Image (cartoon, rainbow, N blue to C red):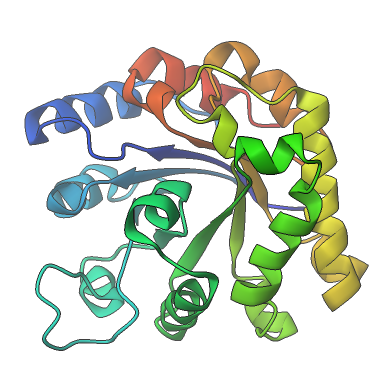
Length: 253
């Protein structure tokens, strides 16, 4: 059974005190997570240690970094290595978010290097892919997303690829209030799974977790997560509101 994940991406939001309160409020709500269900909080770097302490001992609840560098160590002022993250007990790293690609010019090849070093340190990449509005309007989204996968992930062998979580994020539906319909989400998730099946075989493709990220809210999570190839969500704004994110966790199938 595929892993189902409700992942919160706080982005560059909240003070330490606000973040601590948000985690307290969410953790205080009882969650009956099944064996294949997980909750992941991708918090800003300064809050990783605090968040890791908050979830210690909580079954199926993990902390993620929002990024990492592609080198083990060295003279890279301001960057954070996977070795540092591993020493904190962090389990997941979000890679290739559309904001990293757009604002920091992260290329598919650069992201491939980050994927490699995460896997070398036995950390799980949450690899983001997705198209902008102009690509969608030109009906080129399938080829665009396939290229992102091919150039960043398809060098991995069959064992390694199953250790990667995919997050499909239609960029035109992030922070805009627009949301891909559940049918649009399912269509792209099925396309992504088919791309993995063509490369690695259907059995391996069926084992890969694919999250949807694009204005997921408590009100639409159940319908989105109910699609056969949607295995949860990478949630932005709604993850900053305890009641909203609790509803999203409850929507996991």
